[in-house]
Length: 259
Length: 165
Image (cartoon, rainbow over all chains, first blue to last red; front, side):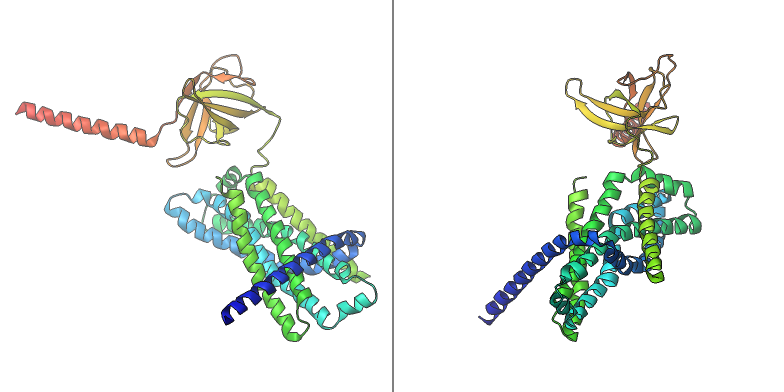
């Protein structure tokens, strides 16, 4: 009996949370129009969400590309197919690793910061204070951050892939002696703009949307105590990682499943 | 005010780098640059077997890529494979008696169509059909024939020995 009561209560709380999150999303989206009128709010958030994630994304992308170059060379040289190293590095980065790893890093770097910021604003009653002054905190605080995350994510993922491909080229043709021309020409011959690049960008757009939504909702929904904010921050990272990886599977099955 | 100016610059740089990497991916990494709509013409060739040829496989002449396979269909009347190819418009001086062959790039590589061997003064144009075609060599078939042949030879030489006895 105790077990069923626990199950029922947890189902009810998770569904009410999902409902709150959906209403929250609707109010964020309706607040976006007022962000467009004041682009300076967006600019400030683009700086804290995008520009400050720039370095971690660039450096991680470079190293991931270099590791792919080394590992790919090791496998491909067994089959005498080192020339296709470029295809392997570029396809895995553009299709999967670029969007996914960039989104995971983004959730860790920017998402947790967003949750902590919003949660502390709530804990120190800044959000209530704004409401007292008849300023809608959703429009003033949440929507610009959401839009900034949504816009930054595809750019960061593209940057990750591009830097990774250059890293793979540095290792492949600089260190391991793969022909430079073959690296690029094989890549160009085998990667499709529509099928690979655009699908990668769609993935990163979806991840940016979901990650920003989760981060802002967890912050806004946090229990306004020090412990509550710390738990909310943890939940942001964990839930973002789950959603990114789960959605990645679904998107991959939809995009690349039929060939 | 100077603070917001540096912020503006940094955001501008960030957005510019992001868009630049998107362009890099589009132009350097994918086949977008070699992909040109409109300025191509279509030719058709019929093969008795087109093997592992796929849509977007390369069409080359003398080893240089001049176009790509647009569609592959099966003709239920003649039991042939009908391959439509888009040839880049700058190569409009291919003789109309050129032959088309399906070759494999490397031992396990992709298959492609190779054009060549024509000597006519007339050129291939939009809608032209290639008359002389060589089908793909199916590796298993060729291996099977080879094995069968060598087994036959062995058997034959065995018979000879018996005959000598």
